[in-house]
Image (cartoon, rainbow, N blue to C red; front, side, top):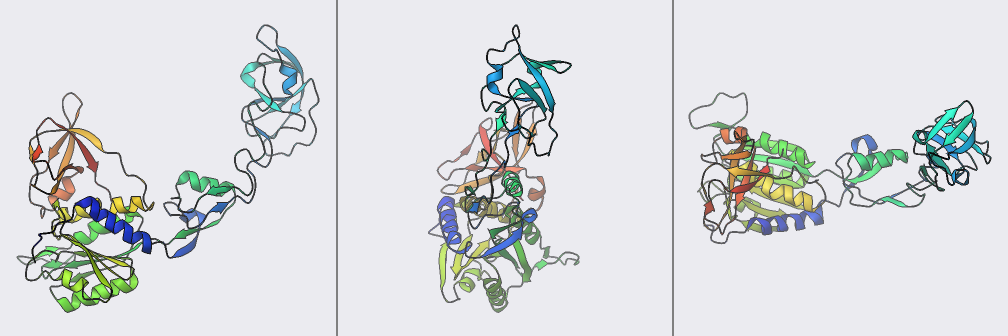
Length: 411
């Protein structure tokens, strides 16, 4: 069959993310907090205690009664009597009485009776006399009990992607284990009689399996895990067996190569040979990546990617990274970089064109992107490309000197 009914990239991402939203969040696991970075919470986190659990100062200075500083200024400072010193980490029991000030460090516990702290910069000490040159109001320079987190509050909501800040909050609450959704599981099937593993001498017409390594790197960047990889020759029975294993053991089966219209390209027929199989799309309005296909079997997504290395990398990034971000499984990547296009670039009529580029700086310090010319099968494009920019399907091309938005490569 030919590709008469091509699917635009954005609707393709919609279909992939809609399916994965129904399937990826069925399995939950409890993991130690130190392994939780980049994982998505599977339940609300309820604060088991208040933070802080004591009133404390946010400055180095003196704990005081605010009323004792009313009207204090540089010309008429308030005079208070030094009443000892508070140490970090100690519980303070002795109340502060009116007319006195107790030295306190940042984070130190306010004594009973104190309701504010004066910054040390606004004081001058002569012996046991403390001259305060700036008045404070009740609560100034302090944090009250539960002001940060109140016991019983929802600290983090189900679905939150855990970063350093969220993990810090959980550590503050002494939460040692968290329930998260299991990492998405992938398998990678590199197809073709000509594909050989690393370390194998090549005969004429053979190539090494670079796609498995490119895809594995991108999967790690997504926060997924690779369950297995396999080389599969041009054998429908062997491909069926490997895809069947992927359906059994993983959430997403990636098939590199074999999705075009050649006589040996039987990936689509294999994917649709399973009970409950459903074709999402076959053919993208994209260059490179026109032969890309996606299908589903039960709770597993099957994605047929181009065999050419550069096409495989760009199409996987343009489909899977946006889908994972919509699902809250991936944070936003590096912001696109605006760059001046160094030469004219033609688009593909009726298809979104992904143009690989290398970023440089001109003599004026401006960022320039230089298109990398060559077929999508050239492995050197992978090594040289910093990113790519998009020429929409309804545009014939972009002129040299235009400002384009370069999306950086991920993974």
